[in-house]
Image 1 (tube, rainbow, N blue to C red):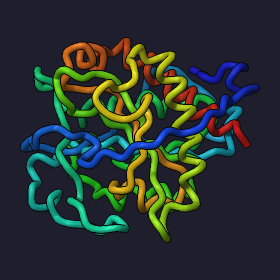
Image 2 (image 1 turned 30 degrees about the vertical axis):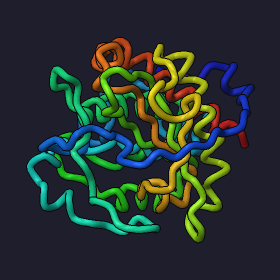
Image 3 (image 1 turned 135 degrees about the vertical axis):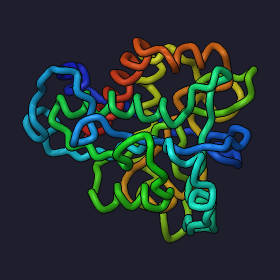
Image 4 (image 1 turned 30 degrees about the horizontal axis):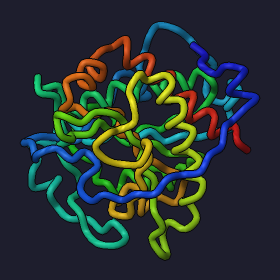
Amino acid sequence: MALLSFAVLWTAACSAPADGAPEGDPTAAPPLPGPEDSNGENDDGGADDGQEGPANGDGPLGDRVVVIDPGHNGGNAEAASEINSLVEVGNGEKACDTVGSETVDGHSEHEFNWDLSLLVKERLEADGVKVVLTREDNESVGPCIDERAEIGNTEEADAALSIHADGGPESGRGFHVITPGEVPGLTEDIVEPSALLAEDIRREYLEGGDIPYADYLADEGLDERTDLGGLNLSTVPKVFLEAGNMRNPEDAELLTDPDWQADAADAIARGLASYLMRD
């Protein structure tokens, strides 16, 4: 189904990014014995809802390319040596990948990331966008964070979005968008456009996702960081969306609700579309 409203096609709101750079993994949960994320329903990695939309290139955003990075992967938990291997992230080294968080009831972040990414992909493709996922299923291992960034670079994406859900304190709830800070020799060219991308996604997600700004970190839903390889190594505008806190009961109830996921995907796709329509 086509998602873009004429309002999105005619307008794109602008506002200034906020600062702030807490340390640690963007899915800051206690280490779990498992994977990152995964994909794969159809041969092209997309979800099949039985409805036909325009082929890539036939919709209002047919000349645009978006890379969606579903964080983590389902096989990471069984591949500790592989995902713990160190990779260069531009200003140091970090683990290839991590397992991710999970709800108190055991719903894994990698599964949530995969499901939501497929829904966003479906909506963008309905408007003609070429969407590339960084993984093909939710059973594999990785890819490493540097490889995820390289996929966006190779595709020369107009925008890249890494979808996650945080593993913060149970008492804290809400979402935030992580933007790249300036890393000399690496991120200078993407800091400003990534901040605009973050603003567009933040605005639409706040309105359509029914989750408030995170109350335990970030500044009004925006968090600038220089320690994430997925951002440091990107040459295209890119942000991370921490869609909510999986450890918080209120957020977890929403994050695991298929109806909510559909609404959230609509909001994320609108945010991406707003950014793509800026030019």
